Image (tube, rainbow, N blue to C red; front, side, top):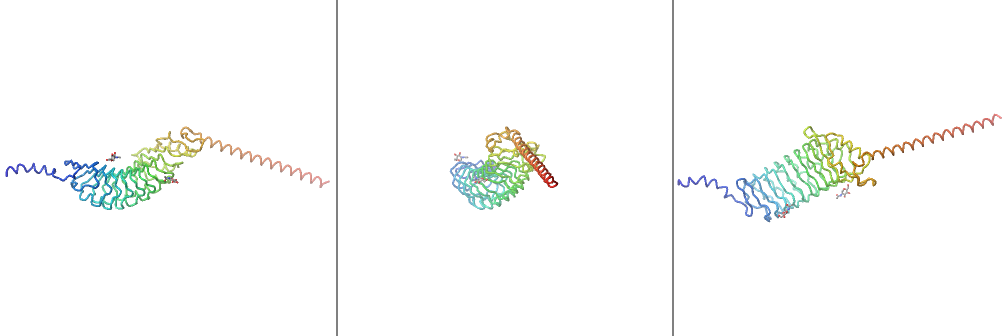
Length: 352
Ligand SMILES: *[C@@H]1O[C@H](CO)[C@@H](O)[C@H](O)[C@H]1NC(C)=O
Ligand SMILES: *[C@@H]1O[C@H](CO)[C@@H](O)[C@H](O)[C@H]1NC(C)=O
């Protein structure tokens, strides 16, 4: 009996080691990390300990996440499922994960998200959905991510975004939409993103930025628009980026676009450069696609020549117009004199 009592503390302290660990996985009990990386798993293993706060299922062969897959894992904070073949997340499949802070679903085959995707993930701070096959995001699927700070949607096939798509994400600081197929950056899409610091839109198909699209982004420090279809931009669009005192500069990346280098574009860039809180990071790499005589030249190398040509043509036109006017005046005067002398000789004849 005494002996048993002596052993009791020892038995108690070893209780955690009797917790179930899914076969094929490694469990590090003191910290409740469950490592099931690259084990050829086809299903989310059952018998993951309830106290687990990190579950790593990357590099397996999961194709679907069922509604009961994570039942009872209330302590889970980090769930890593990148590099599987997940095509479907069933509705409610993540609904027991109220305390999840990080979810990695990158490198899968998701074509869409369930409507209730964000509903029970209200603690989520970081979500990776990059390198999937997403085409359109339902406006409700992200709507309840009120604590989300980082959202990675890069390298999907997103062509259009509902303007309400991000309206619930008021704490977002990093948004990566690189490598999608967006055409237009719409007014209203980023209306709630006052805290957004990094906006990556490189390698899309963006040819237009609506006038007020960037206006709500008070905290922006980096805007990447490289590798799009921009031919020209308006100064006002960028001037509206009203950064607050804490974020003194917004860095703009604008190279690898098919710029049409005319005097107007040169003026816009010159004005942007003069605004203290805006900085075109890759100005020397802004290369002209058109007009033909400037194809391949950098805008910087053309210096103010574009506007000189314009000034010259304005001068030529002015001179031409002036010459025409003078010509017309001279001709009118000449005609008047002719008429005068004709009528003079007529009256002479009548007098005779
Ligand atoms: C995905 O997993 C496979 C097999 O586990 C591995 O060979 C590959 O490097 C992984 N790819 C990425 C992008 O993690
Ligand atoms: C890119 O946008 C243009 C219109 O601006 C459209 O004609 C073209 O099909 C788009 N390309 C892709 C790959 O979406």
